[in-house]
Amino acid sequence: MSTATVRRPEQRQLTAVPNQRQSKDLQLDFIFKGLVVVLLGFIAHGVAKPSALDRCIRNRYQQVLESHQLTDQQITEAIRTSEFNKATNFCNGGNGRLSWNN
Image 1 (tube, rainbow, N blue to C red):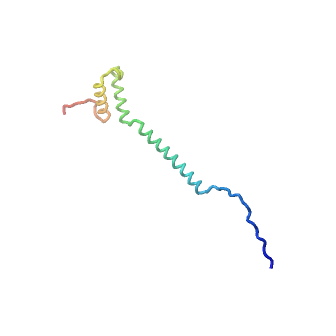
Image 2: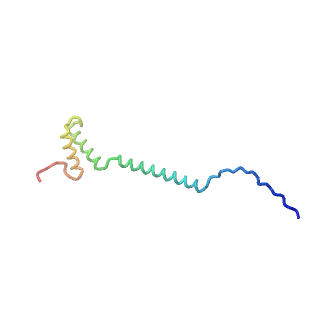
Image 3: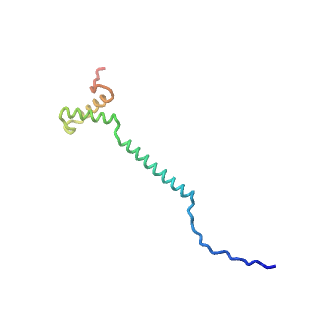
């Protein structure tokens, strides 16, 4: 009976192969983080933008100043506050006049 020759195992270099699942997880992670950044950008833009009521008040206040041919620096703080209150009243559906006689 003959004995089989014993083969020595070949010396192979091990190479790293990227795991397909790990690659997909990284892609999904980048997509998720990107969407979060975009969403935060939309939120920041919405917060920074004045509301319709704020725009109405500012426009009404500017109309009053222009009708009297005044600039914002030419009126006192008390008058400015009063005009903003009137503009707020007007934009909330009032007539723009402050009356305490009710």
